[in-house]
Length: 72
Ligand SMILES: [Zn+2]
Image (cartoon, rainbow, N blue to C red):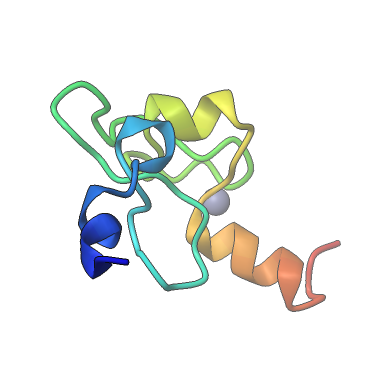
C-alpha cells in the first residue's frame, strides 16, 4: 500500500470542513461558497455558507450551545 491516498481524499461537498478535525460541521468557505449568510437561529450575519444552509446548519455558537445542553 502506498500512503498517498490521504492527499487525494475527496472533500466533503467539494469544499471540506471549515475546521477539519474540530467540532464544527460547517463547510469551508470558497469563492463559489461564500460565508455570507446569517444563522437561522441567532441571526448573526456572515456565519454560514450556502452549503451550510442547504444542510440546515446553524452557526458554531448555536451548535455548541445546543450540544452542551443549554439550548431551550
Ligand atoms: Zn447562531
